[in-house]
Image (cartoon, rainbow, N blue to C red):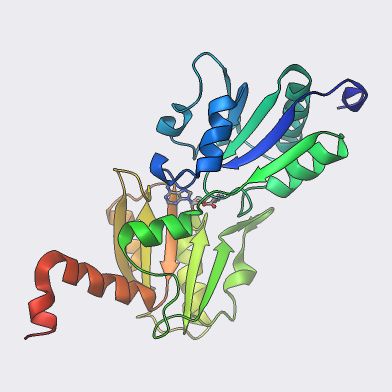
Length: 263
Ligand code: SAH
């Protein structure tokens, strides 16, 4: 990075949220920036249909997990963004969902501003909101959940076990990003913390995309359901009574209203 800040930077870097997958969940602001981008750095969770809104023949640079992202590579991404600002006017770093939620945007934002380059964060719809509307349930409900918790299943050095110890799920909607691989541990920690094994949980793969899959169960059964159905990443976990609300609404949507509330 040395020396770059001394060069004449003419570009501006936009850290843009791509939403959870469905291109129609892109914000108008994100769409406008993508349409004028000269170069786009994107990662795994950005669907090809979203990349398709960019102008033809611009540079598209993949910087996702298949390259084995770790803190060192994160520095390389920061450097690439800064270097791109020397050669291009509109530089986009496109991230799944909302870049400000488990998106490492803080690290990129700080390094860009420290290099003296102009930078703006463009919000995206986070997977939690996308999944709620796609499945048909609210994240809060006066009778089911007055609090929402967004948790990561991972932290820098492994599973985020501490987050699930002494966590009481009653009255909360708990959304766990990056939790699929630690599902067994999360469920057992929650039971150990005093939550009923019958606490409802949903696992949603490919939320908001045509390939979306939803599985529901409880803290005791969910692991075998997920294994049996070979659920793969990206998947998000939703825990709490709101899952029961979702199941009830699904029942109604399927035309069973007359059974629930006979006239
Ligand atoms: N910034 C993103 C989250 C990035 S963390 C956001 O606001 O949504 C990456 C995690 O997000 C994945 O491991 C998965 O848990 C979740 N995720 C992202 N896209 C998803 C999708 N389409 N379906 C299900 N989960 C998704």
